[in-house]
Length: 209
Image 1 (cartoon, rainbow, N blue to C red):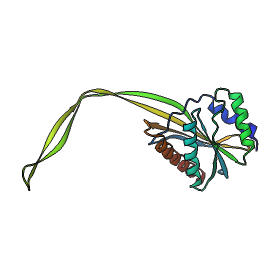
Image 2: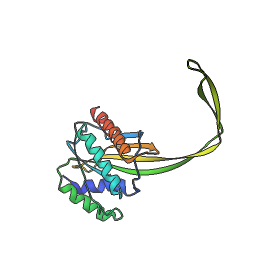
Image 3: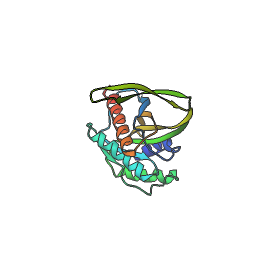
Image 4: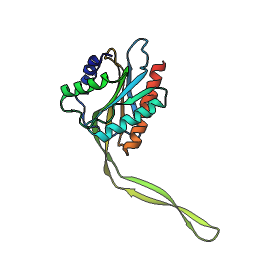
């Protein structure tokens, strides 16, 4: 296991990460790339979510590992590490290197927040018609349309761009990468579960080709 090469390679992807503030309940794939050639899927994958927020990191790793193991992969979480030195790339590199040396994983799957885009959209006046039914007797009723006007307003939303990368431990190279997006996540539990489902589904599809 060439852990030194691997740590250097994937830290180059991560130095610009921000706080992972959630994942989408409706994730969508933006792009997927895979190295050329007959590349095999790793037999055992170490999953690492890049986030200084321990709750978010643990939730993401757990969701991914659960989905991977239920889909024919062998996966393990990086695990609890509240003191990872996120602000010190050199120290982080050494810490991850030591963790890899203690594992037999031949692949590392990472996920990180790349960008958070705040969007403000103008919504003009809208007229909405709602059917209203009124009983006029024991066996009769009448239905009419009620008109309601929704005044013009602004709607805010936030788009989260995530990067998921699979590294080969031996070469230290990224062999698969997916960028995905989601808008306005509702809950961490549901968001990580649905993101994990999408990521593993795309992994299976890519390595089955």
